[in-house]
Image (tube, rainbow, N blue to C red; front, side, top):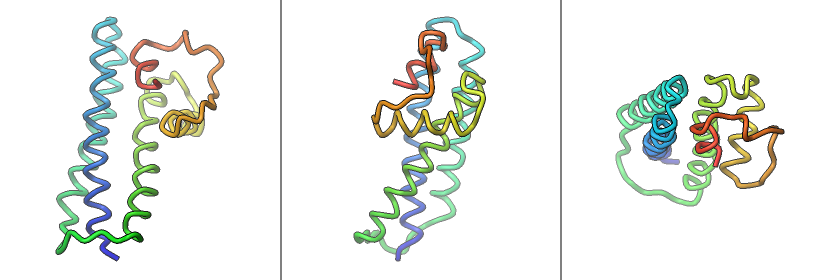
Length: 132
C-alpha cells in the first residue's frame, strides 16, 4: 500500500478544510462576532499546519492509487475532517462536550440531519454558518 500517498492526500484535504474554515470567520466578522472569529482562525490554522506537515513529511515515490488506498483515504479523511471540523464548536464552547461537537460535525458532513442541538437560533451566526 502507498501510505505516503494516503497521508499526502489527507494533508491536501485538511488544507482545503482550513480554507473553508475561513468562510465562517468572514461571516462572524460581518455580524461583529469578534470572539468567534478567533475560534475559526485558530481551527483553520491547526488544520492548515497539520495538512502542511502531512504533505511535507510524506512524499510518495509514485502517485499510484488503487482501490485499497482509495478506501483508506476516504475513511481517514472523514475522521480527520470531522476532528478538525468540530474544533469551532468545542473551542467556542457553543457545544461544550467534545463528543457532542464531534457528533454534530459528523452529522453535518454526512447530511444525516441528526443533531444534539435543541435551539440552533441561540448559536452565533458564524457557528450556524459552519454548521450549515
